Image (cartoon, rainbow over the protein chains, first blue to last red):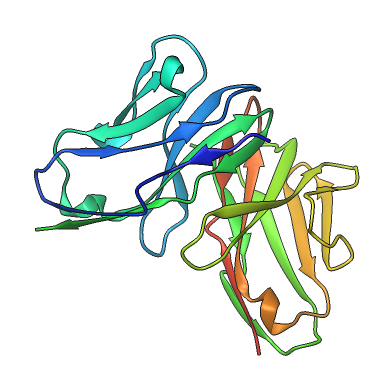
Amino acid sequence: AQSVSQHNHHVILSEAASLELGCNYSYGGTVNLFWYVQYPGQHLQLLLKYFSGDPLVKGIKGFEAEFIKSKFSFNLRKPSVQWSDTAEYFCARGGYNKLIFGAGTRLAVHP
Amino acid sequence: GAVVSQHPSRVICKSGTSVKIECRSLDFQATTMFWYRQFPKQSLMLMATSNEGSKATYEQGVEKDKFLINHASLTLSTLTVTSAHPEDSSFYICSASRGRAEAFFGQGTRLTVV
């Protein structure tokens, strides 16, 4: 069965630190990959997505992710985090119209 | 981006009663809607997929008689938790899709069964 793994469950950073959140997906099936963010008390928002083409994907709010097929990975990065990036981040893959989510990574950014 | 509205955002009900949650796509026609459940500190688990005018497809382990899904139009899907029990307390989230694997999420409904 298709799956998504996020290995970092909790990450704590200071402002201006660089961020990289890991995401690995299982082999097989359509590889449409997403990163969603859920700010406290708010609904899920799409940060970025990859369907095909350039493996380096730019998203909103300064986030980017790199699709590395050989490693089955789609890690999320941001060069300098802000306090407002405190949230939970979910990696997901889409079979046609159906999303499978990773367990999420809770990021806390301290001023 | 497209807007998906979910109502109510919070509901408290007595054990044994039924609760209906609505999911509306406000500015687009959603060919498919999805219902997820999120347990505390866990990821979203897909419960069912519904296409307008047809029966919902439930994921393994989800009781279709317990969680009734109706997708009567291209802009509205409802989830009814029947005979709710405390273990049904959770955060329920809907999403709506208008194309190739792109889904927009509602703000979620926190259900508490007392």
